[in-house]
Image (tube, rainbow, N blue to C red; front, side):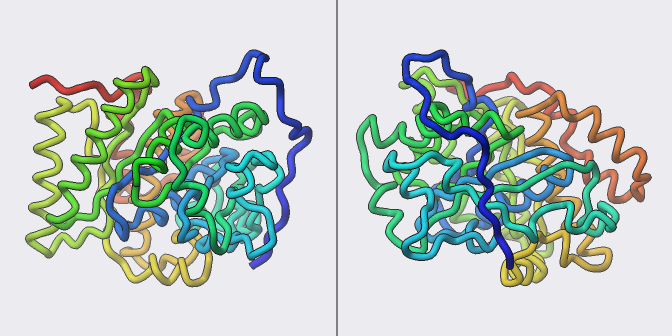
Length: 350
């Protein structure tokens, strides 16, 4: 798959004394304390859908496994610059950013949205990739300076100016990477694998985010929980999802929802990963359309929370696209719940 360097104009580090834009308010992190839950896949599909909605988006891969980078064909080989050098402070994010050609909506401009084409033209996907190895030596560092490294890089370089939205993909969260992501990202999505063992990890992750906000004074906006790899035929999956919804309702009274619909388990997902393509490009048939629509529904909820001013144009474009009723029902499932972007995670009442 081809990639090109996505260099932006400028890129010199600005003076720390200058007034700084709040790029944290346009940055999202996908957080989970457990690995193997489809987190990086979810991040990749949100990026793809947001770009097909006409947004300029950037993904930042903080995972030493480089899952997001591998999916998008941007993994930095040994000797090439990556997020590692950004976190070390030797380069700006702009210098490391890549533009994976096969993830650009413009390359399938002749396709309908339901088949992976753009809904609104002009969207782009850029990736600040992980290196092939050695990232954990940087992301595992603790201390105030290390844990603010991504925030400082995004803010002082003006990196966020070019994008409508930035999505950070950290590894299954250790304390250091958790704080690295939360210092940079105001908005949070919590992937949940619908298995009973994953529920305690979800609770821990959300409670840790609340504790971070309380101790630092940095606001965090919980967009919602995204259920992944759901098999509705399995009792464990349906019961886990029901338990998650019950806990969320008790603690947050609807302010932090479980996003609808759950992403179904499909062989299309690993196939797309192997081909380094968005799921929407390889999905086929009615089941593939439902999978694509599920990811789009989550992406729309994210966009509505982070850049709500974009939603009117997206809805107008969907109306013009004349979606089949069954797909429209899925795509718009979360919109009312995500119209208010000001909701934030707070310590729940006892």
